[in-house]
Length: 132
Image (cartoon, rainbow, N blue to C red; front, side, top):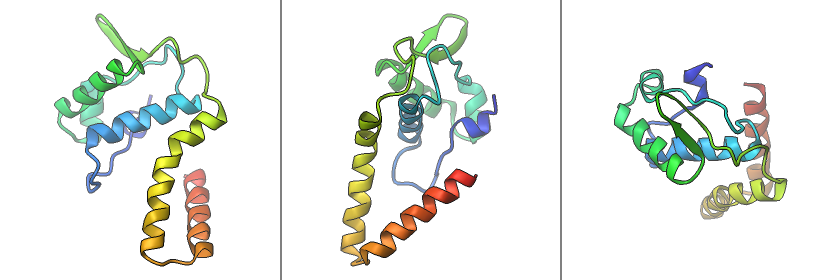
């Protein structure tokens, strides 16, 4: 598994790195990109790949375990929890995206940007990420 592509971080974000990791895993499980039993890179591997302190990764993993996203196995890598056999329904995944879009919409209104420009930008960003 390519650890540096497993998670990405934005060090300049106001959102703490551990929270970025939790949210990314939550979305990948919800979409079915990660399924039950799939191994997660170790704390040490991920900390090294992302150039962050291992305690940051450990905190994120602890939260993911408490939330029921990951399962700890003694002496083995952590895995996606057993209850995540398949992707969530589209409606549920949309609800995970809603808060981010609400925030973006509020910021666009505050900047008094035309709706067509905002939608064009969003469409462009979706296409750019799909090509990556």
